[in-house]
Length: 531
Image 1: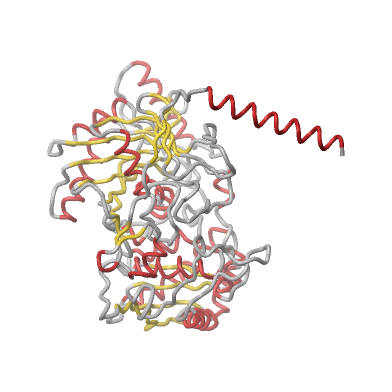
Image 2: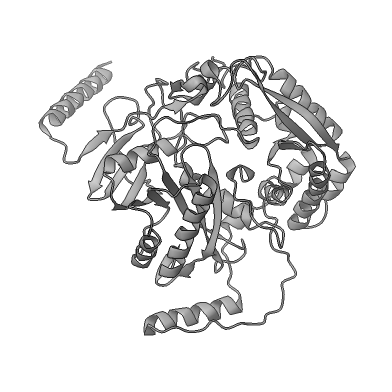
């Protein structure tokens, strides 16, 4: 008892000393808070939480007197199609989250009920399954046991691709297709591709020789023509390293967005989400993929083109083949994808892929043309978000592309695990908190405690984004405000917000899907085909 009393006394003195120190010490950094961006829903009503807005007002542009109808197609085994129908029918009425692992009720603000997938509530939409294509289970079992991992994926994709082709010939054809995969495919193919993410990539003889020549040319400040090398072709086929990406890539050419589901998930086995959250995410994605916008931001600068630029490996087995990727967003629901030129990758000089001056100019000029063709108006302002720092040549090239644009902001963004902000109390920093590190460098908490939810909706210590550098016309408050707002435009789920802005969030997935496109296929410009 005495030991406990002495320990309590030490803790009290420590708390008193800490309070006194905090009272005397003036913070030496600038910190400000950005108000939570509001979203627009049906009838022009606003809310900060997508789930609360959909429940109360319905999706954007919804008519309270006329329910929307979405034609849904489904491909799978007989049991898979039946399981999907059963799941959709079960979700016509409200879906509760149930109990958590501690056998306690979920917080109703963070985990609200799904109101139902019927025309009277929620999305005010009738999700009508009108087209079905049955694949016998034995064909899936044969495909899932066909040799090496790449062959198994290829066989499964070919099975589904044939049915997608037949479904695309129907009139009217589905607006979105759900592909339900059986347990045998899940067991054989779900984790294929994970070993390639951690495997050290080996350069071929030609790649090593070309990289050596590039380094020598850079040292001597000379231009050298690339040489062609003849190599023995590899037996292993390239591509088909991920079941999700491969199916998305092959479905794209049929002009029908797809949504993948496992039979086991629809039946409730091994859920990683509570039933209500699963229903929210499932029907939000279906609604958007059928060319509908569930919500949009209330305030975002008019005629601004938000561009995300990232890089991806064209071939998962080669480090030398890097390509650039641009995603353009208007902030009102339209996502456009553009495959860019090859990037430069010099491991000894700069290990981060980057663009030359000419390539940077060309890429941004193509993005602006795509934006103008889609919106029938030229942007008055361009905001570029990049996942790495801007090199001088890149900045020159990007600025040269802005011949018709008066204002711009180029922002380099990355996650930062080393620098953290602590505040008094038990809760993490409030979402929207920004800390200035130096001129043009900031930490921005896009995750954290959310006052509207009265909780931090996360399982781990929140990691802030770091604004590495900023070149442009706007102040830091505007730059941070737009980044925070763009974290709320992920229509692949109904989460309150995401950690990254939409400009960068899906860059890796989009690149992975593009590299699995069949030979001769062109990637779609529309973002919903990559979700």
